[in-house]
Image (cartoon, rainbow, N blue to C red):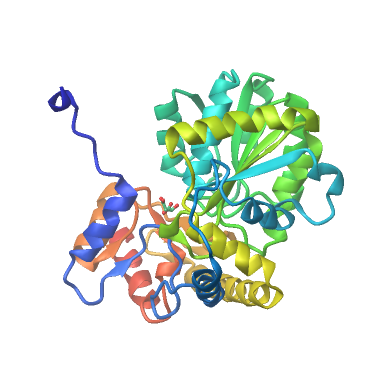
Length: 392
Ligand code: LMR
């Protein structure tokens, strides 16, 4: 009976949206769910996307079904940005499909990992909570390794230990850039080592690239993924356009599989298509079509990249301002300056997280993860003072 179902907790990240909305204080601050905000605290539609949407409305002749793979023009237009223009030899070993957001892509990738018979998935800790939720739902065995060292850089020993233990029946999930929730990315030299270790261990890499362009730049943020892909025979890449095209609720993502022999691609992808059919049948079209129109038009592409540069620049300024605060109360904010993307973690205790909400009206995840983009030059001093207050 339906009434036999057990109560499920609301998703802790998504619940923050409501918690913040119902706080009546005018100077409340939302550092919760990962959406970019301007210096005025807004999340506008990208100008390039607005223009593409207008074009789409005027030119789209049909909304008939496209198939489980979605808009292949969209999927292929993204490929040079992800895999690099200088990888023609790799091109025929890679095929993709459109998915509803990065979550849809992860869902398919991890279900394929399970279906292909991999025994375990190594996941750095902490990770985006939905990674573990998807694995639990699919029934994939997760083995955690430590991702973050106490000094705010990557714990390479944690990763080395995992890969020393892993073998050809294991897979590893890595954040391509802008690690969620820590903001702690691997350096290029570390990626060089990781690529070698993964190849040596024969572990299947699954790379989640959900924030390309929000860290150091579109090319820079793909460094690790490209290093790993040239070193291994097979890989899965989960891509999201939710952040770097600002399409959040339109759910725009893609899954790419790379295999050693191009002849195997149709069979591998037929599994992804079948899983998509059983989950959502076909991805929503609108956002992916708008991205395709941006990428097919030189002027719109330049406008989009410019908008992305401005986002990244603003987040760098916020990070620099936090880092400059240094020792604040009982915590050191300086590592935040060297971290990337939307998120960083401040080591608040659960009581301090509650006090930040109740006393100061500042909302962020229970893990201490803050959305850097929720801070503006208008509210950052209040935030730093509140941190000092609750951690002193
Ligand atoms: C986040 O981590 O806040 C974003 O990726 C949004 C989400 O779906 O959780």
